[in-house]
Length: 90
Image 1 (tube, rainbow, N blue to C red):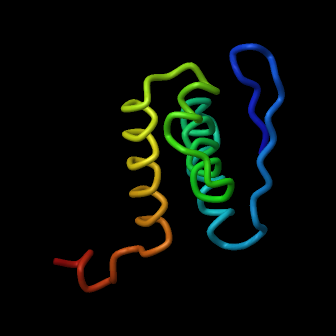
Image 2 (image 1 turned 180 degrees about the horizontal axis):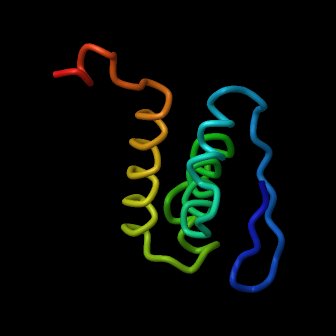
């Protein structure tokens, strides 16, 4: 997955090829905002970038970056841990 920031600079992030990556990519497909937010999560988790550094890179406020990352992390957790059939039936 790759991302081009506001300055037109290409920034690439490698994702592992496994079920988690497939689930995340399927969820992000068709939405530029979801792609960007997934990229923000990858920068935070795999590169260890701080919220401030990410915010500076993409031109967002730090609190906006942290909120987006929390939202994506929650969605990814839901994708990886679907509810049990019993919970869905009730």
